Length: 151
Image (cartoon, rainbow, N blue to C red; front, top):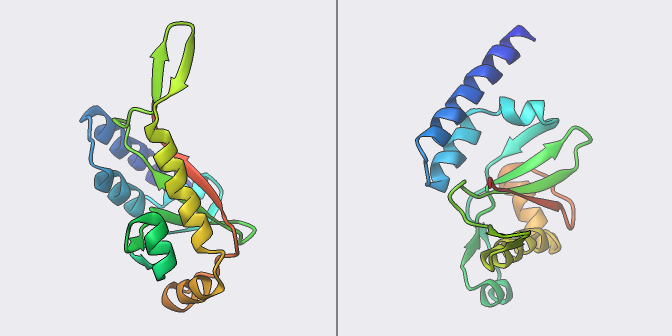
């Protein structure tokens, strides 16, 4: 328990350093989370898997306009259910401050569409089988998705 606390304190300090440096590269945050899995542990996850280059069939390529999907993480809850996590840097402007109300910038629609595509990827049994064979991760159909962004 003491080691986990020390590891978490170091992870928090490292994250604060990234934020203080006004880091704007998503890859830096991806690297941070890949190297500080204790963050996922304290959030109640059993495992965190970065997945790169999930191959797409022709229909999905046409729908998304990309040749592969690249979710930041597939997280495994303690009950073994998986969900998808997508990171956005603190510099991403998602909420417009308008006097007396807040509203979203239209960019949020792109991010929502992106994570919906990630979830829909797992609707296809062939895709789930590929991930299971390639990464030993048995993701169920229609996993939950989460976008993490700072404001």
